[in-house]
Image (cartoon, rainbow, N blue to C red; front, side, top):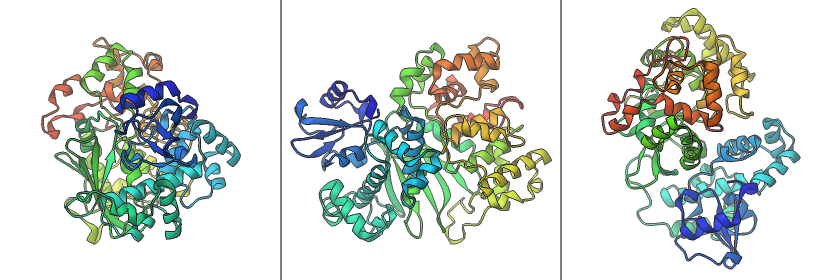
Length: 513
């Protein structure tokens, strides 16, 4: 819900009922107190004439309101950036959440998006209600507040971990957002805020429902040996932030609409990148209610939505990693592609050294490492090895940018220009690595069979026609169609028995996805 879509009457009804479906979709500024709140704030509902509604926390702060200390706006689920009416704004918000404006000025940031600075500012004023720089400042302040409450990091370290350039800038931002200096905010935190155990722990809130079983099943079947592991309810992987090597793990928090992210690094500068990537990997900014409202109009999808209402589109920790995996998976099964990915990591990935943890001893190899690698030595056919080297060379040279700073469909078009990358691979990478919620690999036999509803598979053209009704959530439709209905009744079985890996498409239609 962005600035041009806010309906005051609807927002006030949601506020009065404390409807959790709207948490994070708008914020309420109370003119009589100067405070802004989440729609679920337990405080007494203010009078209608005393409230203003904002599309994001940054807009409320720019209007002079400070964050409520009771409902904690910084703890709200992320605003679903892809729900906006401007693709440029959606891409900009995604880049800002990854820290793109922390070290970059607005003119370079706008150029990265392919627009002018003034045009970008006008778009933000229309769709978000505040300038891009204000969104970036609010993001830093809100992450810092969470670090103050949820960790024992020293205040000075928190400033730089959240992306602030100086302590002075940090203190000023915290006073502006929360009406108190960092030391006072730290003193107010709950005594049980710091999670026990090693590493740095943070909560990752999301909008319920979330089908964690389906996410782990999908990612577990594709977990790259030496780099990723799925054990029980926990996802683990190696990571690199700047020059620092480490690892992370993510698991659900019982009784809460949040995941726990635990990070092991020698220093925590740039932690905002880790948080942003984790949210992206698990698609935590999705709004399952908005998606379901559109998709349930189709009878085939309606039944699947009822069985798995919280199904998400697994994203990418690193877009290049997913693109490599998609090419590795051509003409082979999921298990075969995972084996090849493990060989690739073992042969060409940098060792973690002292940062290694059980089962995690390598980083996934980067583009520069693979651009000139002897990929045939791990058992890759010559044509597929050439396709991987072409991808790696394009990314390493900067000719191909996989971080989704482009319009819908543009990433898939750029990928299709590479040798060995067809429509299915391009759509799959756009769906997972590019975060395109409307990507749809219509040629996939599994999708065409599901759309046939028990009859012979529909044609690719017919699949495209049917999928028009799923816009702008065709990627979520694809996930539901890929998921066998019987999995709904097997949710409590061990992850290894849930079997996404057994969903094999023919060799011409996305095997190894």
